[in-house]
Image (tube, rainbow, N blue to C red):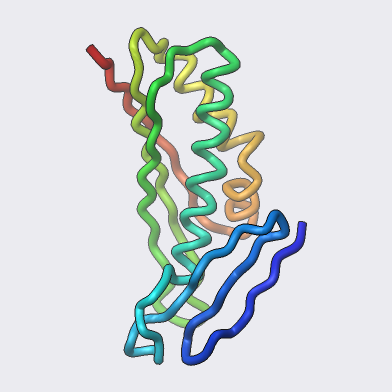
Length: 140
């Protein structure tokens, strides 16, 4: 896997993935930025959410669960001093569908956390306290 990040002046950076997709990262005005893009640490958090949500949806679909929507809300805390690493991250999944089986939703979240989500497992091994929960919303 490869990526490139190019400085574009002030606190603005342009990132390009090896697959050719681009993203703008910028800092807040008090750090010399113009607030034109996502913060790099926010990008890490979103990457974690995307990785884990991808797993949960994939596992549910392979299990023939009628998942129609799945969101993950992430709540993170960072250290107060430099380096301001993540110290705690909680992932709350909201899985929506018609006739979803709770045991399968629970298992999908567990499998993502314990086996498949490289981002979650990597951050956990680095000392971040990561927790997960879920709720199921029955669509009418």
